[in-house]
Length: 300
Ligand SMILES: [Zn+2]
Ligand SMILES: [Zn+2]
Ligand SMILES: [Zn+2]
Image 1 (cartoon, rainbow, N blue to C red):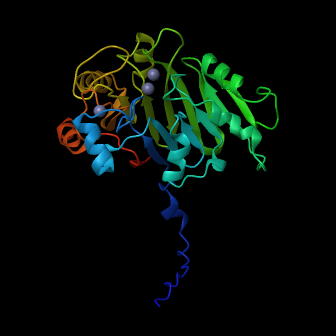
Image 2 (image 1 turned 45 degrees about the horizontal axis):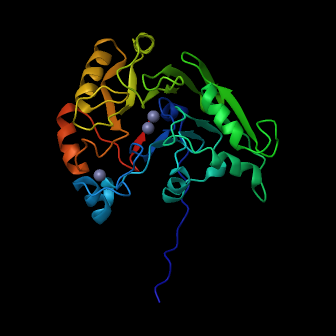
Image 3 (image 1 turned 135 degrees about the vertical axis):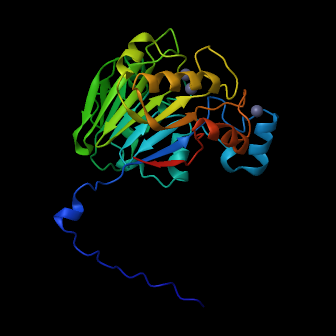
């Protein structure tokens, strides 16, 4: 029987202060889900994209949108969030900050917040939940005896467009901006600014409102994850397609919102107009964009 290979721990040589200078720990940004609300393969769909995803899997298999920064920060909590954590070997007990963009069901499953209050044994940690007023109301209704119940170990933080919160343990500040997505609440976009990087989560949205454009001017964002629900099709009805995204990227670069060499990641992709992943990747490469897929990792 083959023996397990012995792993030797090798101590890295001590670095001089001069070598340390200019080095910083990278923050891992992970796409957990890259799809719009229906998922891919969409349960009852027989279109080419869904059939490909169902039979071959791989990057065409998309769960609903969600992201993670490092071990402690999640963005959106879709009905697939729990399963995504298992798939990507992420420990939910390490989470400390959950940012929700808006209350549409493909971004918020309130029941999972309820489960925090009914664990057999908890670790004493506190999770801050950031969202607009409506998002926080929906979660509050779902959890046992509301935010005040200490068993839930949840702290609500109301976000409004223009508000910035600090995450001092990671030297990250997060600013909410107004999306152009729904009439019943202020759907939010988020800019995460860490040491030496800026990440913009920009879905669900149509062409940005003026106040958002105003804030974006001169931001010099490094990575933008952007709504591309309609795939290669131009549409303006609460979401965007790649032709719209091209215009947005152009304007952002002109106004200094995006760095010239910024990484643009179209996400929240739907089988309505989105080709198979390989084809999409080939179409986006000349535009300097990389499509999202479940499991995509970017080092910030
Ligand atoms: Zn959505
Ligand atoms: Zn389909
Ligand atoms: Zn939505």
